[in-house]
Length: 510
Ligand SMILES: Cc1cc2nc3c(=O)[nH]c(=O)nc-3n(C[C@H](O)[C@H](O)[C@H](O)COP(=O)(O)OP(=O)(O)OC[C@H]3O[C@@H](n4cnc5c(N)ncnc54)[C@H](O)[C@@H]3O)c2cc1C
Ligand code: SF4
Image (cartoon, rainbow, N blue to C red; front, side):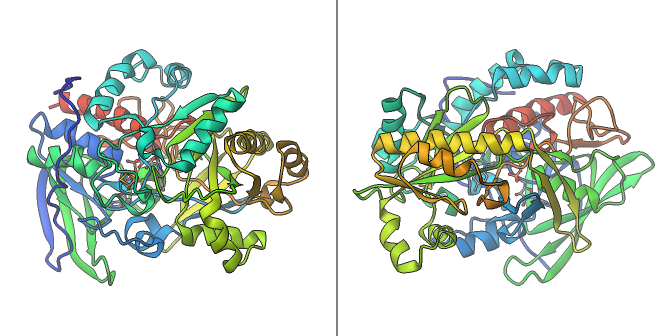
């Protein structure tokens, strides 16, 4: 395994992947991996690096199909067409990426190490120290080198993030420019639409490219539907190719494999497992976290033009609110217009307002949790039970965000909360939020995780601490679904780190 800090980041053209065909595919490999996001890609790289024959299967398209509009991204690069919503005390859209690269194709590439206290809390839960803060440090160090992670440079941050940095310094909070895996970023502000300049270290430009050059194959446009089973051993998977535009069913896929790793994501993994002939116990889909939150928009006299600069380039820590993490965020103009509509701002006024907006997305490490089930038609059935304590933390994060935006140069504020609308001071926002319930909030989440947890007890976990499924041989999970708790920071780097450690263990099994 090559882990050599100092070699510089790895960036290669996206690997060749096979796509839709009407012909059936029947192959045999050492390891089949479902999903090509941070988990699947990191596992493929670690295994192929020591000579294991790997086939990755990916539901999304083989190549980036980016167009500069939200509709195209939803259709091709978001799971379930961008229409996943959790119901419960409130209505909460949840986003997850799709395609060769998974969520990294459309994420902002914000890089955080999981806080030591969170990692060290896993030891007693797992009765295992492999993910302790001390053990994870070397993997994080390597990822920082491998992906080319550094703080967003002021030259490409853009005014939206600059406002947050100025405001954070002015009020004396801890914060600054965000670390991101974007070594070639030119600050075009379109991370949510994909990176057309190759500025982002999405997994297709590193893990998958390296795995491919090690001999791994990638079969895209392929939805895995079930396992091949022999007694209590998983011996492969079956699936079907689907045309990326027409969704016409194509060839059937049968992969015979010594081991199968499921890495279909925090929603995709339990959604897939619920649809198979294998029962992995009552914990599948339970305890689902997703870092929910809302937003505060500052309205500035000067033009911010938040589409210029890093999509999300700054953050701050509100004092005395552990796990509350506001980030600067821009929105595509058409999405911003839709977001302003519930506030009574019609298109002409909204169009005039958008160049003057600065945005902070307020994300929390959730005590609340939900479930991932499966509707008969195969879509994820999501529920989420918002606890009052988390509602108060979202409100607290929004008030702190108001302070930062006003100190950074905003004149007044909008919040996407019914009954609040336009406010001028943090105190006014706090007073108006006090009477609002979670149903009044426009919510958003894009960090699904912890839905098929690691643990020692099959009643409350799906896999053991070494990644093996309870009750079956030959089956492993290695993605964001396995975390035993909410992380509190953006999860992609920790997903890569944990998948790398688990895959190294699998590789040693021969
Ligand atoms: C808009 C957005 C912004 C984000 N910003 C950040 C950020 O800045 N920093 C950060 O750390 N995180 C961010 N995230 C979250 C991060 O991208 C995810 O946590 C991460 O991608 C999860 O990795 P994963 O390997 O678990 O799953 P995913 O990346 O979701 O990959 C799973 C893959 O499996 C495929 N799949 C699913 N089901 C099947 C099936 N049955 N058969 C075959 N393939 C299947 C999917 O198409 C997908 O490509 C963001 C996410 C989104 C959506
Ligand atoms: S801001 Fe633009 S160039 Fe930078 S990583 Fe995002 S999409 Fe790529």
